[in-house]
Image (cartoon, rainbow, N blue to C red):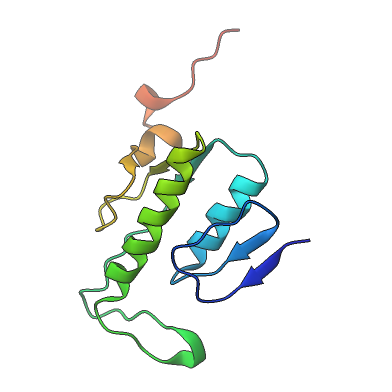
Length: 124
């Protein structure tokens, strides 16, 4: 069983507590770490709230364009924790403002038809 503790942006637990932050992705990273993953890939985490789209916080209140900046602080704490525990977090998002993590090419992770250069090699 995991316990969720709210509003601890920069905290990580060594036990079964999961600190919630400004984005659900922080909770998911903590769960992946607890499950023993040593490599974590982020998809569609752009952290860009500068345009007309809005980020919704608790109780449906709209936040301003600083939501991405607040999330980046939480991601930096996640990176610091991961680095100190031998865990690698990659950002495979196309574009966006999240530059805390090393970038990984999305298309190389999920090859598709017509994109054979990235397809897994078949040794049969």
